[in-house]
Length: 430
Image (cartoon, rainbow, N blue to C red; front, side, top):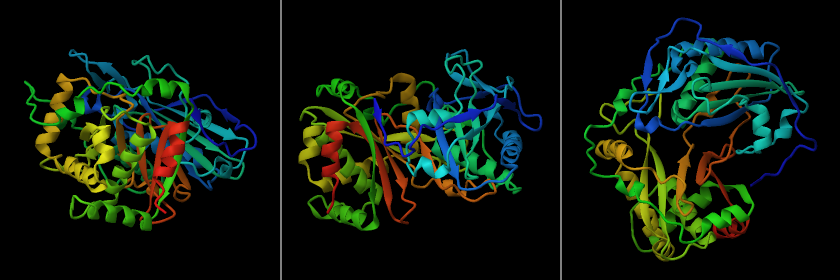
């Protein structure tokens, strides 16, 4: 159960047209596209871009630009299939296109507020998902919905299958789409060669195995999450608070030299969440940090379109975490991230052939950073977005850039109500 404050006085009413399939403007490659172990994540990622103004031709401009950008990002017009090994791949021969919906809303765009996470009821009205998602052969890999508001503003709601993108490649796609809408040439040509990420046969596992350690729920968090309302909140950390945290990370014992704002804030959140959930001292807990590996491989793969994230992992008991100096926690996180090199990446990819990821351990926390995502460049011709938002992040914690302050970070996290009340007090730095 999720809780959000709704800023609209009345329920949002959206009227939709029937979806129209948008196909690539020109002929594109057929056949099948290999998906790596990092791509085997068959679920939709919804997001909504909000804009203050538009023109009478906004729907046509965005729809025509989509047809053009799909020539470069042609796998998004295909459908998923299973290969002979039972793994997912993209059938690029089956060009069923991208469902595109035009819609209108009964309010002004300011009524949506400035939230980073949208209420699920609002999200389902602004993002088109009215199709059988479990029928792989027909379920689209991308949908698009343009919703006009009374004030002249509009939203672009998309749902994109995680098999196709991570945050970075998804943002590159959106910015390429926007460039074409503005009549600009593409500043980035995507690389579709996912064989780069193919696992080795036989597997050569030398590292990354901590990620796959199974964590038992000895603190009975499953019952807590079922019994209590799950509340999502965002916390703003300005430059001054982040400087305080970084100072704490280097002055209370471990002496790690220097660390980033991300590492220091990650240490605060992991410790505070563990205390707020009242984890038993012997409860195992992982901190998983998603690391973009495009620059870690040789040669680097800056234009790679697909999933290029692995998890750095800190593993220990809640007792160790809560009782150790703050600097020790930051040191552990820093060292885990620094371990991610090409050998680690290859070992991690091989591990996915051997072990099942422990995805839903409630005592563990996954940090997802969107701080470097350039969603301010997603300008379709009517200015940059006034807001960018998504749905929930199940057991994760989202770090986003604070648009109101250059050096600030916004932390978005969901917890049971009682734990959230405690967490809120523990992260105060006054």
